[in-house]
Length: 504
Ligand code: GLN
Image (tube, rainbow, N blue to C red; front, side, top):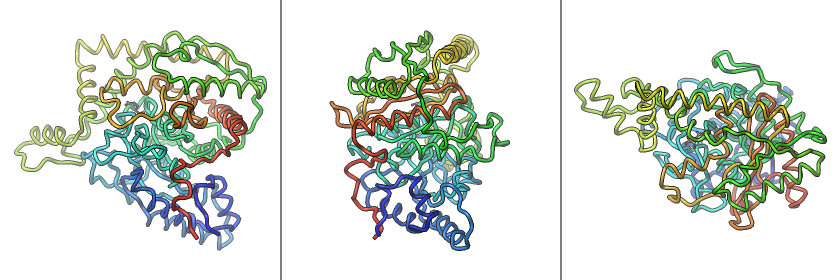
């Protein structure tokens, strides 16, 4: 019988492999065949790694034949954002600077997914060094939204989201500094989660803003994302990342817990925000009704300092990026300009010719913001705003158990549509404050919008380190939506469903 990732969730794949319904090798071949037929349209990958996927699959099939018990995600295809090291692949961050950079080791987050039995099918495209919301700043090529190839998949983890939406993989890893998992998930109609800061190790992930960066999974169902988070946190805190913390665990086991009597917060100002598309607002209102129908109570919450979030982020983010990207000095890593006669020339020419426009803009901004005289005015003020925003969230969670809000203000936009950088920065107006405060956030797709016909989504934001309950709420939204719309929770972009990817 033919198997296709279009109709199988990660949970079903792992169960099928464990039960001997199909082999991990058959799953790997189905994923690689889907990539072969669909990748020309989508261009989600910077590198496809068939040998690594087939090798991992063969190990699982041998283990099963020997009667060994299989790890929880055995045979599940995984795409990995290209800012994460995986030994045997290049880690380019979609930048000329790291075009030929070979991963010296495997990042903890990737290692843990592989230990759980995932098959690494490739390294996914992204905005250069994760600066952006559309994947257009990749130095190599654009990635097309599987729902409409003339539109962006979002970013910066656009390749990861698109690969899942097009059924080329069941799971993907992304990183989220200001929305880079949640916004592309929204635009591609998949589930994407940024756990609470510290829940997933950042060791081996190329740093952007170290106090904001968090790794998280993409999947087509909440259950798949919960299983991935179980895998990412298995083994406890990572001693190689000083900010890594012990997670509560049991994420997948609790997704169907009852939400009756729990409280859902709504931020009225967000519902009236300028630039919020009516169809996205309608999705949030629909999700509120769904949660209410399942017994949750709706409560209005006031977070008075959220207005400052974007401004604070565009001070803290570039300042940290400037410090982190200083290591790409044209000497130790990556691209080196030829023919230079001294180190200063080599460094400045390598950086000038290696980095793209947005990466340069961020670093120049960061250098300016950290310079003497300017530092007090902006960086210090941004840190104060950060404290106030964090306190706002903490206070809100005295009244509620989760907050529901939009994920992205609009559905997927066209290439080139947001050519002014400050317009692009507004794509993350609903996601950024959550990185500032550190809480967990998750995007849940809610079908297609009445106006655009493109995926619309909502975002749930949890209390810090309450990621298990966050997933329970996400599952409740998904369940309610699936019942109302009569669709199962595993949707592949319509142009791709059934187009290749089958294994006869
Ligand atoms: N779009 C935001 C930015 O450009 C967030 C990116 C991210 O989360 N990596 O900084």
